[in-house]
Image (cartoon, rainbow, N blue to C red; front, side):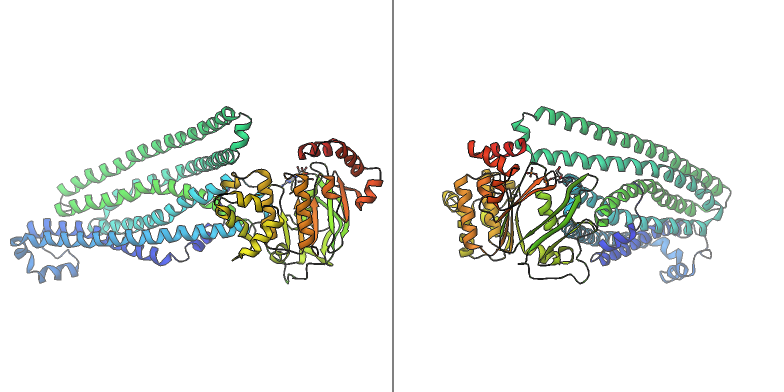
Length: 612
Ligand SMILES: Nc1ncnc2c1ncn2[C@@H]1O[C@H](COP(=O)(O)OP(=O)(O)OP(=O)(O)O)[C@@H](O)[C@H]1O
């Protein structure tokens, strides 16, 4: 993965609301660093001027006047506690600044994480269905959790550290140069080597972190898939296979981190040697310079202290660079989500009445990277009528509905879909989807109570509307049978409900918000024929004016439709009233005949449709 452009812009966007905290924390960090720099100067003055009796001429003017105000070096020798107190006061200021640094840094980083989570979540919510279909949920979750954490660490720790390192390096070198230029240059000689060495490793770390993150995403996706598909795993006795698969990948993932650990250990140990050499140079040359009288004992002590303060950041530079590599990868992975384009309405999006005729005009469609699934589909569904759709597995029935709901955009030159004469690509998405009720083939319920699930489409759903929807979906008896009624918790994805109960709950949920267009994508497959008929009867009675599209493999369900579309491998094979189709030689009649002879179970029906 190439480093992403505009990382800074993305970070800046996430920093909204937390900048002030980080600025304050940086100021405090600067104050603390400055205080650290003053202590060696106090020690130097104490050793050279107060104890050693050296003249104060070489000291800076403000230091000289401060010493005079304190009674001069002679008097201070008698009152050494003043020097000790000075060290204590500076250390106190340093401690206070560090405290405030940590507090404001914590406030800033928590706010930052909140902003990142909120921004990512609302962005993901607005991403097209297509994007969700082509990305692993586990991987997205990993990007929204551990990559956010890495980015937070980078901004709240590494960025402030970087500034602290900058201050420490600049100030240490300034103090060192002010005391002895040659010694300062000797201390600086190994620095370019250390920095170059760190940069060399930076590239290796980056690649390593990328691999680790990518594989962590795969591992999360695998775990997430297994957890949500636990029923399938158990039903097929695939536990061992899945465990082996997970362990194999986990082993590989662990080996990547071990490799990284080895690389980092090598880097740290070797950079330890480099910084040890640097310290040795300063100590040895410092002693020589001191013996030659080029520097005083106090300056030597101060030099060693400043060198310590200089070496620390330079050594940290390696860690910083490796952390920056990691953060860079994390930010790029978040950037991948943020770069995905949100669903947007076209300019001047329309909000026309949605109770007109629905027209599919020469619609052709292929999923990204797949072959054509729908070929030149044309039909009109007059307003207020019911269309039944019949077809084998994978014949494109659901795809046709996804296109109507614009879950997948219909590319230009692939025909058009209109409602009341208006091209749906020109209709505001919220308006379009708000007027199309759809019960998907696999009903999804949230792990909340039944009431919460049913009321998801309508804010403040009244009891009367709720009961009416539940009655129409033939779910009333089921609710009454639950000891907690509507307050029954349905478990993750509605696992505590049977297939038929889930389907009826999904239908009731749709009916709480009656819409002019209603789509039932094989939504009656898990209910018996009697309930199927009851639900259709209720729909007709309550929502007679709505345009209804019923996808089903059951002829009895389709037989009451105004017209039936038979799809065969994405092509219109038959279109007409059930009576007409029953007269024609084709798929509809063949299935009708088979179902007239067979038992009425959905599975059999599906098999039959596919077999024909
Ligand atoms: N997101 C997708 N990406 C690529 N291909 C897809 C995608 N969704 C569906 N398909 C393919 O498109 C074809 C039509 O699928 P669709 O779900 O519309 O069929 P269907 O007629 O509703 O089938 P069923 O009766 O089994 O529900 C299938 O071959 C399917 O594999």
